[in-house]
Length: 354
Ligand code: FES
Image (cartoon, rainbow, N blue to C red):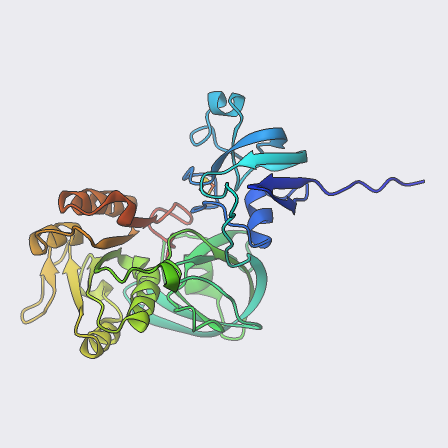
């Protein structure tokens, strides 16, 4: 007689979700539409840290930098890495309490490459057609199985939630990178089929009912523009007269892209101001670009950001400088939203990566 083993479960905030022994707690909850804080999904940011109240987990690939031994001994775990050893009950900040927050359910999808476009120096736009629409919030990302490599890479969506059948990804080339150099700038062909998982990440515009319509400042570095485009266009769709300042920081003029797209958006929405900023190469004569770093440009331009929300996506030094700049201009910390590029092919390659 064979014994059928029951699938382990994870219980959070009174919601019980089945979780296979080789599945992460975060994956199980998000697939069931139960929100848990998450960002990198790679064990590096610590956003998904939770406390195990009952039962045991296998910490699997949890890095000791993010989850030191003393924290493991104290019952902490990384939801994106840990799997259950039997039924577990956990406490996750924000996911606890009587009302557990719902989220767009995490799903596995298949997409077809519809177009590959060079938009700037070492920067491509990929459009992927989905077989069925994907529900997500503006600013979230998907994780793509890089064809022919066995590797997975994360790319932010430049889409608004209404654009749910063709995903727009921005990819920056990283020399010798498995995902960018070998695939997106190498073997990729229109018509290729790719597998992806999504949506993921907490860097997103709030639901419309929770959106206060406050003025926004967005600072994007390189292909960090992708999620910012989704966020800005969604915010303007909700409130066409919303006040938004968008800084796009790049090294030189050849790295800028979607300038015309943003100029058109600004022409239709007088509350939107778009400011391209060049950090390493001279500003061409007659250009509207500014020189320097976008976070410094914001400080020069804005005397007070009290009551504003701030949105940052780019390399970690830019994001850290942005947080300081926002606080210096009196933005409330709870209004500061950030997404750092994480090392994949290399630092600053694909957001959330982008
Ligand atoms: S460490 Fe789990 S989401 Fe970043």
